[in-house]
Amino acid sequence: MKRNVRYTVIIPVYNEEAVIQESYHRLTRVMQSTGEPYELLFINDGSGDRTAEFIEGFAERDECVKLLDFSRNFGHQIAITAGMDYALGDAIVIIDADLQDPPELIPQMIEKWKEGYEVVYAMRSQRKGETLFKKWTAAFFYRLLGALAEVKIPPDTGDFRLIDRKVCDAMHSIREKNRFVRGLVSWVGFRQTAIEYVREERYAGETKYPLKKMLRFSMDGITSFSYKPLKLATYLGFVVSFASFVYLLISLGEKIFTASTTAGWSSLIACLMLLNGVILILFGIIGEYIGRIYDETKDRPLYILRNKQKIEKVKLKEVKWSVQ
Ligand code: UDP
Ligand code: MG
Image (cartoon, rainbow, N blue to C red; front, side, top):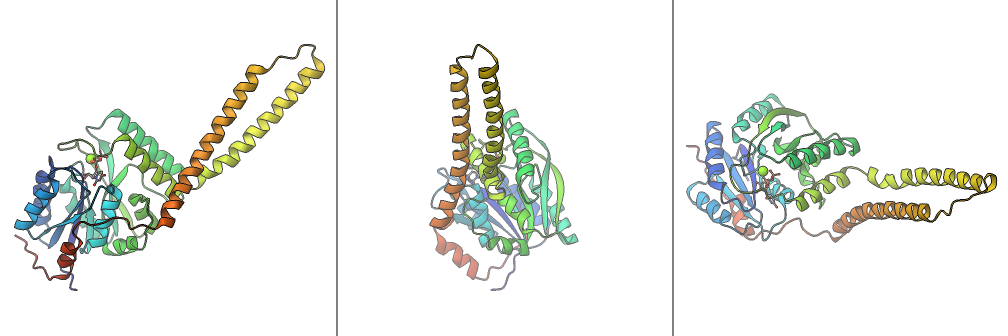
């Protein structure tokens, strides 16, 4: 099949009816300014509102618009992956629908790509309109990940980035289930560079990342890229054994050299509680890894499309890309 799309923009959407029109217009304006053929590939991640209807409406009028419709909510990272699977462009841009990542930055990314960089990621120099809690936890998470991860994952960087066709093809070979896409892009390598930007406020609507999803996402990041939490058991084991041995010597000394030995009931309970707590935490960490191994062995598909036929037709037919 002849590839006649220069740029693909991947936009995952989940209940974004409040912003979708504005994002479509801004993206279209920016992409038309490039003067080259492009596609806007929306992935509807099981929205319960009118998001898909809006996109179908755009697609009727504008053949640059395509829609991948998930059968349910599979999650942001899976939606991006599906976008990469179906993208036709020579360069692929991943962007959030809520306009926190300004589309106007895309031409700058394209410029860097034309200079020869294969990954151009956008680094947040400032985050606007997000709660202190989100800013602090995000800052902490990126620092922790930096300390633990075996590959270098740039801090304060989301999935807003441009990747070359080669990187996209390399990503196809990675089919792990609990995906931390920004880490995987670092893992595949290639020539990477950054541009800085100010992360804007959400244009409208609420965040689709409640605390539970955020925690799961950060756990995926850490467990996919580091075994160090598992090693914690060994280190803690040594420390606790050493401390217990010292404590044993002290109590023996008290018993032999002093007349009064303390009853020791409360200290015993305290030690037991502490140790049980530590053991449970370590079990939990091991559980996180085992759960992910379980997901891999089940080997389910990453996502299910509601209307697969439609997109296959789009993939096969020769589309005349209109650049107005
Ligand atoms: N999103 C998605 N599936 C989800 C959650 C989010 O496709 O389960 C999309 C969402 O529509 C948006 C992007 O992922 O385009 C980022 O989500 P959001 O802006 O809510 O996250 P935040 O910026 O608050 O971290
Ligand atoms: Mg957002």
